[in-house]
Amino acid sequence: MTGVVLREVVKAFGPVVVIPKLDLTIDEGEFVVIVGPSGCGKSTTLRMIAGLEMVSAGSIHIAGREVTHAAPKARDIAMVFQSYALYPHMNVAGNMSFALRLAGTPKAEIEERVRRAADMLELTPYLDRKPKDLSGGQRQRVAMGRSIVRDAYCFLFDEPLSNLDAKLRATMRTELALLHKRLERTMVYVTHDQIEAMTMADRIVIMEGGLIQQVGSPREVYTAPSNLFVAGFIGSPSMNLLVGELAEQNGALRVRGAGFDLPVPERMRARASAAGSREVVVGLRPEHFAARNGGDGGFAPIRLEVDVAEYIGSSQFLAAQVGEQHVTASVDVGPDAAPLTSGEYFFDSDRLYLFDRNSGQAL
Picture (cartoon, rainbow, N blue to C red):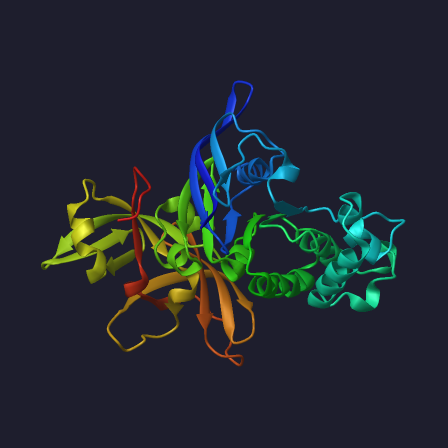
């Protein structure tokens, strides 16, 4: 059975169309993360699924049932918001059971559901505490528990970790991934943080300007970005994007620009040769630079004028220039190496990306 389906969904606020037309299918039991910059339409999409925003056109189906105009409570969904929104006068058990008590659920069933959710989220020792006596991570788990006890078909998360510090966000990412495995329910998660998307999702939906730019597994969107936006958005640090031109040399295809001259990988020569324009954008991920030749023939020399070398343990993070274009590079040289300086470095040319300069599409 298909989990959540959006068919030609349009959302407009008066004359302003924020989502022109959106088609998306989320399989039952899948963990899908919708990611993109602020204002891209990701939260609006989630709120339309939840029924908190009505669609201007198109249809929404959940568990094979059309719910386009159904009230939120009739959609069999549970939602976790960015704000914990806990009742301060109630203890953890009271907060988690509140919706069930409103629905008239039998007391014994409420107690069993709360106990099961508390065990799953490691909240059992805190059931009698008030929210003010909990840490930020514990409060967020209570908010999740309040959704879990409803035993909904689909769980929606609207940037639930953005109020937490970096260490706690990393911990909660793991807990959410484990929660998905335990519940085996459909989950749709919205965030602007591509690290959250890469570490938790079965599939990632990347949005910009109200449009879906690419849908795929974390590996797919990282290794095969469909366009310049995805290439620059996915990856930390982000991909270096340099202006260049394709050129033939001794029967081989190369890409050249100010300060670089790199061979085009065999896997993309046919598409690059068939491209209508010789003007391209070259994508170089920071982690594919090296201080020395890898020895397998795939590494090509490239000169970096290093402005800053930052020590980050076994690697050094370089802010540098190639010609007049700024690049970043993460170079593994071991923890005892002296700060790296300007000179010849090597790039794994098999990991090079090419994009049409006019359309922005991958070659």
